[in-house]
Amino acid sequence: MKVRIRHLYKRKKASASGKGSARQFTFLLTGGGTGGHVIPAIAVARELRKRGHRTFFVGTREGLESKLVPPENMPLEFVEIGGLKRVGWRQALRTVWQLPAAVVRSMQLIRRYRPAAVFSMGGYVAGPATLAAWILRRPVVLMEPNAMPGMANRYMAKIAARACLSFPEAKEFFPADRVEMTGLPVRSEFFEIPKKAPGGKLTVLVTGGSRGSRRLNDAGKASWPLFQANQAAIRWIHQTGSQDYAEMAAAFRELGCEGLVAPFIENMPQAFAQSDLIVCRSGAGAVAELAAAGKPSILVPFPFAADEHQLRNAEAMSKAGAARLVLDKEMTGEELFHTVQSLTAEPGLLERMGQAARQFARPSAARRAAEILEEEASGGKRRKSS
Image (cartoon, rainbow, N blue to C red; front, side):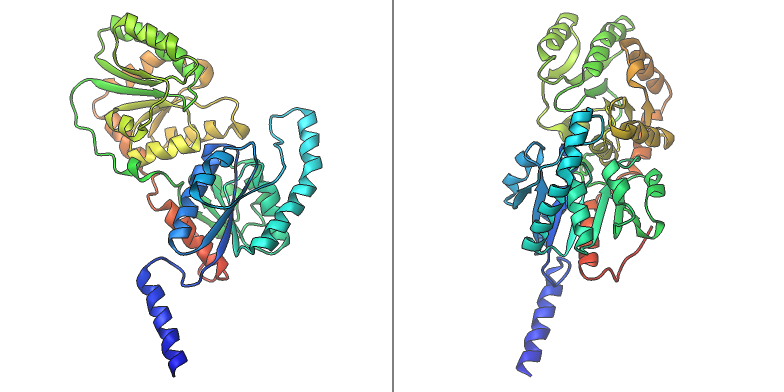
């Protein structure tokens, strides 16, 4: 009787905590190279740890995970593997040569940590880890943030237990009964941005990411005289990156433009909140932030992105009426001027675009990914598709 009462107490305590599964699992997270892979994976890891689970990360020393994961106090294990896309033949041969050893290394890590399931954001480092998980019969949950899945996720689609997607366009690459539209984890600050009050000067945010974009910088600088010549009341927020900052700042001051030019914007949610229109690249992270904030945009896909995934993301947003797509080769100062003018000429258009962007927002993406991992760790009995 005492044993029975103790078991009942444990179940009630776990249920009262509201943190998911009563069982404690270990999960392997992988995917690396860029912030677009690592940051969402960290968000899922945080959610898992809040629920009482253990996590560890598998990546490479060269990837951004080597800087972002250690501050999370999460074990980080390395494998030696390179990419296959857009690399020379020497690097491609080296990667093929490294693959068997990377798979063996990943199998050793799985045997050591004994994860109940594996979460993969894709990227070249994810290939060995997910293949090792399949060999050792561990369920694999993929998260694909782009409209066009990356090579690693496409190859692993058939062996994955579940696929968490952000765009409906990606569904065709995965078994229909294993797909769920979860979205991509985004910082809560972007969801909390209040609706901007109408009136006042139009504020345009231009950002090519933390390193900046030469194409967007050149287009922005060339557009400033055109807006001034047409007496357009515009306030600019322009993140240039460090390389072009001095030249951009000097031109901005010389023309007497209103606003801010900065090499790096520390508080990007605040910059979003001040903006009426955003000009940026169309990586998965940028698109997810636009959706969370409900902001209209002019998207300029990076032309050398693997599998043209930025172009596919921008096409999906444009098709939904959330963004205006401008190809990189067409983005000039004159094009930027005319595009902004056309978007602001129609009353209410920017507001409608912002509302359309919100349909891609998934505020509970990290929580749902954690729930799916718990389901698969428990045997996948509660699987559902969408």
